[in-house]
Image (cartoon, rainbow, N blue to C red; front, side, top):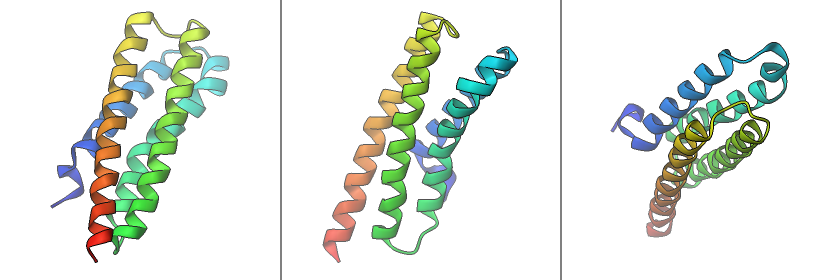
Amino acid sequence: MKLEDLEIYNLSMDLSDKIWDIVMAWDYFSKDTIGKQWTRSSDSVSANIGEGFGRNSYRDARSFYYITRGSLYESKTWLEKAKRRSLISFELYDDILSTHNTLGIKLNRFINVQTKLIEKK
């Protein structure tokens, strides 16, 4: 299996690309404050999935998937701030929130599989 075969990796890549496109349209102040943080946290999701995938043990990989989950929640917080500060529409908020929630569920399932693989050893 390749990294690019992981659904959670592809979902996270698409999510971070969407966030990048949104933030690029903002004014300088919004980009410099919320935009940079939101972009970094969403980029971190796929980056940590990639780093975990490249590890030699399930236990080591799972540690990165836990970090991934933290980055996903951080990104969700920046999404909420963007909505509350009227930087995105309610429709866009709902769309991205749905992706966040789906990715979170799939990531938790993936972590559970990793845990079962660790317990088998």
